[in-house]
Image (cartoon, rainbow, N blue to C red; front, side, top):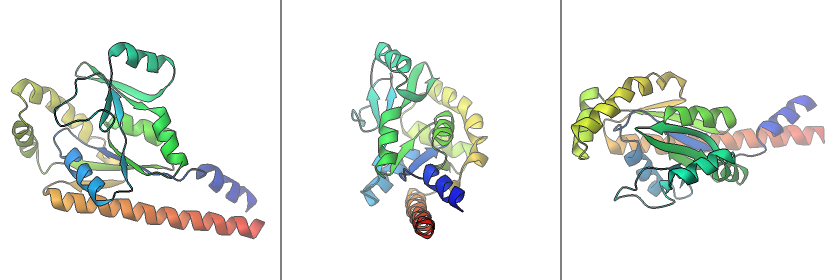
Length: 215
């Protein structure tokens, strides 16, 4: 019994949750995430590092930390990144310190990260990462959404090359949201966040009770 309690406390000394949205580009992950961030103000977005240019709707430190390639490579050399990828010629990475701080202070965070980043978070924080796959209703709908966002044919073609790869990771996730309607998808994601927080509370009280029994 004592070994069980020690194991539970070592795995859950830090209770913060990381909600990771994965899925093909154009599935609506950002739209769903932003609606839930407004609905659940205690949830924060995890900003990642990137070398790509800032888009008009983005803000430094909210979606990403925008930096030059030299700075990105310095962060790699100093082990400041949990994981990094090169996508369409640009660097993307997950900053180590903000994730560790959020988990340690039970400050739940949410992020739209590719499947490799999601795997890295689950590997490093298996008791904290919750993977939610967001899929479009069809490939045709996916292409249509990209066109509506003003993406050109060349960019859409590049993104579609990743669709099959991204879709293959669906079975590795904890939850699935088919985004046919943004309102319904957002409501489902908000319910997932609240359910995982409820499960965490049960685990915490279970660990506390076991610790009291051994005191």
